[in-house]
Amino acid sequence: MILPAAAFSQTPDCSKFREGKFRIADTRAGVVTIADRRGGYQTESSEALKAIVRFKITWQDNCTYTLRLDKVLRNENKIDFPYNMEVHVKIVATGTDSYTQETSSSLTNGTYNVVVTKIN
Image (cartoon, rainbow, N blue to C red; front, side):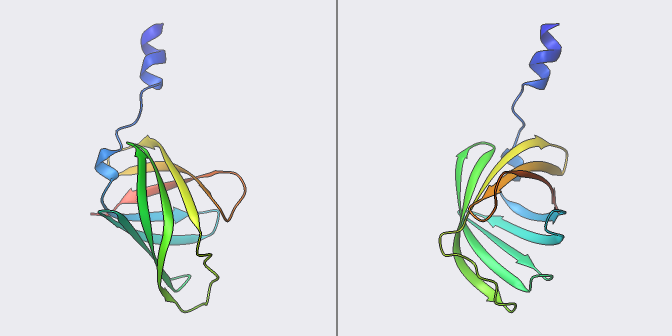
């Protein structure tokens, strides 16, 4: 009886998702975003929003990180991106080439889950 409980309480292996290119299908916002995570930055582009923004990424542990808005690179729709915008992310489950993240931000109340697929 102890083994099944231990299997479900294991922390997911998030290390393979620290860098790369990802497709984020945010069904809550109805937007698909492509994120390119390299080194200490994550650049996100969305054709629907006609925007490209760069975040500074800070890893708290293997599966938890914070994105802080660093620079708006493109903003054709003139979206008001707050200069102090933060997104808090916790990877709660991993698969072969995807993971589920629990997301909260300084712009929204509460948390929600989004599936992220690695595309390279």
